[in-house]
Amino acid sequence: MRYVLALDQGTTSSRAILFDPTRQIAAVAQHEVPQIFPAPGWVEHSPADLLTSQITAAVEAMAKAGATPADVIALGIANQRETAIVWDKRTGKPICNAIVWQDRRTAPLCERLRNEGVEETVRRKTGLVLDPYFSASKVAWMLEHVDGARDRAERGCLAFGTVDTWLIWNLTGGTRHVTDRTNASRTLLYNIVEDRWDDDLLRIFGI
Image 1 (cartoon, rainbow, N blue to C red):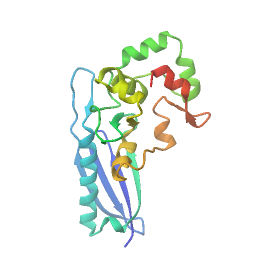
Image 2 (image 1 turned 90 degrees about the horizontal axis):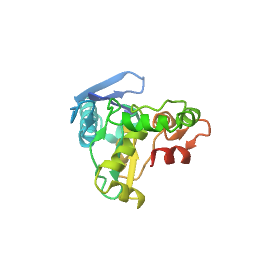
Image 3 (image 1 turned 90 degrees about the vertical axis):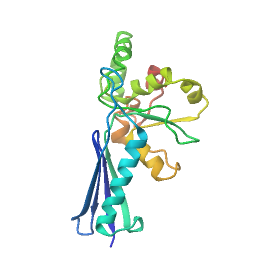
Image 4 (image 1 turned 60 degrees about the horizontal axis):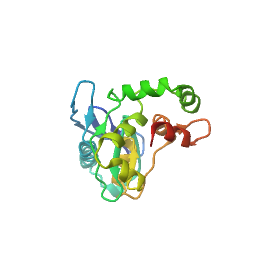
């Protein structure tokens, strides 16, 4: 039997759904993801919780169907999209908790950039407005507030990703640092007109 495995990593839970060759659901498993609220308006996840809850759900779904990883011919990921994670490329360890899409700590940064007159550039390149909802200001915050992060980033030691990237990095043993256009387009760093990561946007956010 060959299966397709769908991973659904959400804000409050991680689900895994196994589909059989007739496109029927063979098994489902789900695990909650704890949310962390360090301060008013701040929302975080442990990247380890995101990973372990998703892998556990996948293993349980396969067990229910009597399947093994070798029986899975394809895997798809749906994820909470703007949540940002930064980790060390050598060790695979995150430099801090994931900052969740709901988090508002970077509102002052977005307001400052708006006052500097860059919002039209951001809108033209990304189709989005300057808002803490998206990933770029979250990454900028980590680089400024986590000890040593800026230096490590400039030395090429750090990787950034949305949750899909974090899962794929770990599921491939650190060999694949990838995303797709739909997730990239929610970062405020991806030029949707020219279909590429954009140096101007990276400079705006200091990334």
